[in-house]
Length: 190
Image (cartoon, rainbow, N blue to C red; front, side, top):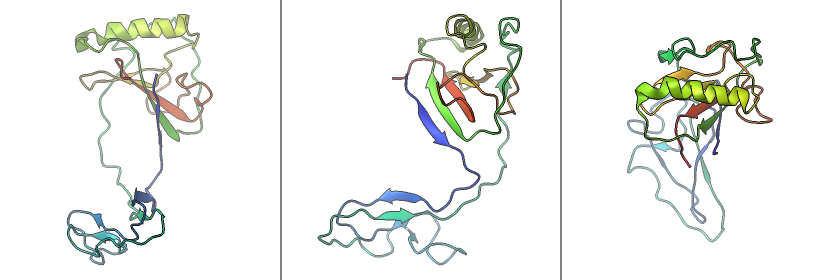
C-alpha cells in the first residue's frame, strides 16, 4: 500500500520551487503575466517567459534553488458534497461509539483500498459496507480507518464517524494517526 503525505499550512512561504542542474548559477521562473518588479513584493526571480538573464555556467558543482513569492489563498472554494455514513448505510451498531479527536490536522495521508478498479460507482455503498465490516472485525480499528474515501467517479464518502468538519483521529497510518487525516482512493493503485 502506498502513502503520500501532504503537509498542510495556512499560507505558502518562500520555498524552493526548482533546483537548477549542477553548474547553473542563475535561472528564471516563468509565471504567466507576471514580470519582476510589476507586482508589489515580487521577487527578482519571477520573470515573464523569454526574459531575464540566460543561465550561466561555472565549474562549481552546486544546486541553486529558486524562491517563490509568499502567496495567501483566500478560502473561496465551496465545500464539496460528501456522501454521509447514513447515505451509504453504515451500520453504526458495529463501531466504537466514541469518536476521538485531535487538536487539528497538520497532514493528510493518501491511501488506496486495494480493491478492484473495474467497479460501477452505483456499487460503492455496498463496497464501503464490506470494507467497513472488514476494518472493524478483521483489523480491530473500531470504525472505518480512513476519514474519507473517493470513488473513480469523483464522489467523496464520509469514512470514520465523528464529523467531516472535525479533526477525527483515524486508523489509517500506524503511528501517525493523531493530527492527520486519511483519504483512500477506492481501487488498487500501485
